[in-house]
Amino acid sequence: MIHKTLRWMATAGLVLAAAACNKDSIVSENIPQEGVTPTKIIFNVTRSGYADDAETRAPKSEWKEGDVVWFGVLKSEEMNKATYTGGEWVVDMKYSISGNNATLAAVYGEYMSQSPDYERFFYFDENGDVAYTNSGSYQVSEGGVATITLSLDRHPQGRMTFTGVGKGKELVVQNMTRVVEWECYIDPMYMNFNDFDSIILTGEEDGTATLYALPNTDIFSSNYITLTVKYDGLWYTKTFSGKEFKENSNITLAAPSLEGGWEEAAAEYGAADLKLGDYLYSDGTTSDGGLRKLYPDGTIEATPETVAPVAGKTVIGIVFHVDRYAKDTSDYTKPLTTGGPTLTGEVRGYAVAVADATFGNDAAWVLGPNDEYRFTLDISTDKYDWNGYANCQVMHDYVTAHAGEGWEMRHFQAAWSCETYGNRTLDYDGKPTSDYAWQAPLKAPAGTSGWFLPSCGQLLYMQDFHDYINEHILAAKKAASNPMLNEYVDKMSPYTYYSSTLSGAELFAWGVSKNSIDKLRRDMALRTRPVIVF
Image 1 (cartoon, one colour):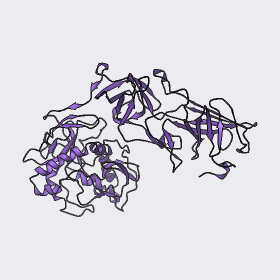
Image 2 (tube, one colour):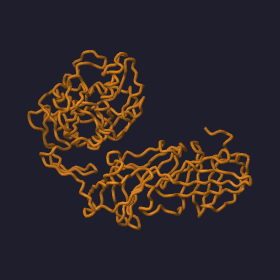
Image 3 (cartoon, helix red, strand yellow):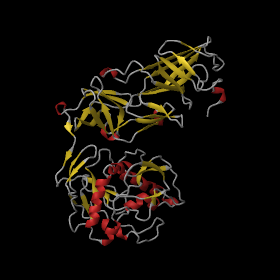
Image 4 (cartoon, one colour):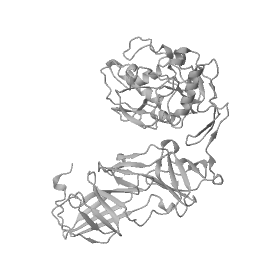
């Protein structure tokens, strides 16, 4: 809402020429501003570098033609625009600034544009620099000189400069996110980063290539970062100790080479190795699924024909990750169900079920004793979270704490449909049913975690290999000797599955489809696909 007292008393959108740096500019018309008529506008704007900027080349010191800075009163929805034109700043004061000594917010984006439909939103179309401030100033002197001072010295992304790349050569960096959208409040909490995991850089005139981004949570800690890049047709990986890459930080690296300590990143497998696409059987054993080489971008080299399951065995799952995921802190020795299985030994891998747990009867994420779905749970809202099992443990703890209010685990329908997969005998109302008798041959083997509702990060990881996993599910379906299983076993749907991860502590949960991730109200009915750790 824009109060009338804060609007220009003349036509909105009037363009004022203002000086670059400290040069004054005469205002072409007298426009009242909070009772004072400015005779000049001085527009002082500077861009300072990133932390530890001495490690690398400084950011461009000169503004280029067409650069734009958006600014307005801090926490206000009204944003004004200054465009660098012909060596000076041209200021479009669409909204007035209230009061003398006002605190201003401002943002510059190398590839930034304002939404044509909703002026509070800005979009960043490419990998590029972003700088902002929320401590700018506005003053109008008694003599009518209006001074706007902005020091754009904060950066929501980090900057990583690769040297020696070569002019025009491409370098692809995996597992990074960049700013793609920002609400006009100049505060990082209103930013959205993309969900894509690679950014393509191109060598500039001096042979450098610069990344403006932040790493996904599974490739860094406070004192190291593991990079995976593609350069000159090869994939490389290297862990850099003592290299912290975060907001406002800056690091410099040499272009990747085997001589520079980088290693080839593609993983190679033999038939006996446990790997993506292998079959997990009802007796807890596994067999080869045919994968021979896996590249960081998800490209797969496999046997010419999909390797069939072992004859006479029942496939219950397809392996989608090997070894414990780095950020998975779940305790698999604590059973989800009374007398249920628990993992014995270290995590060997994760597998996804060959059938939906909700076949023909989709599940709400939660519907309590009075159809309650809006309440707080201490479950992660991080969409890259891999703690699906731990998330389900939180639901069990909630049920235990609220048993006197009529809560049972079946009220958490999505999670319950997964953890009872293979031995389910009740419907969501707690009434006996035989609708799920077909699942019996697919129950979790002893020594495993048991089936559970995957986290958002686990579902996202599987979607990267959606088609490859489905090929092996169909191979299992074809090989099934049990006619009942042959009816129900089927590939993962391209449509949305519930995860165990919340997208807001009270109301929403994350859902994942083949092509998107969505915030879903927790009383919606959707399919579920269990996963297991063995």
